Length: 161
Image (cartoon, rainbow, N blue to C red):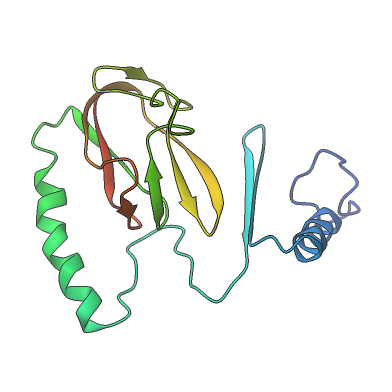
């Protein structure tokens, strides 16, 4: 690598910028920071709980593994049409269909969504995370209620492509 790291002021992954972000998190006692710049994204989390970014969640004990195993067939059965896809929760938290109790929901059954359409908010560790659809189509089912606790990978919406 012949170039000096961090010479590109727009580089979100510059080590000096990352260190400064961590310092700011510590200074302001933040537990999570999620930044996007163009097609780049960085999420920094701290704490003692493991965070699963992709892949199946690890079972902490046999007691928690049994309910997850029971949920798998139901989730698999939810896609009975090859033109349907599921929008799944990217984290553990509390699902909210609207920005606040007085606001209209982000989406309703029948609404068209695009990849960047915000479909809900998931609150995790007092941080409100806007969840994009990450697919295009029409919402055909809302699979959770506002205020419900959701797990990583839990289906939230069914979308017809």
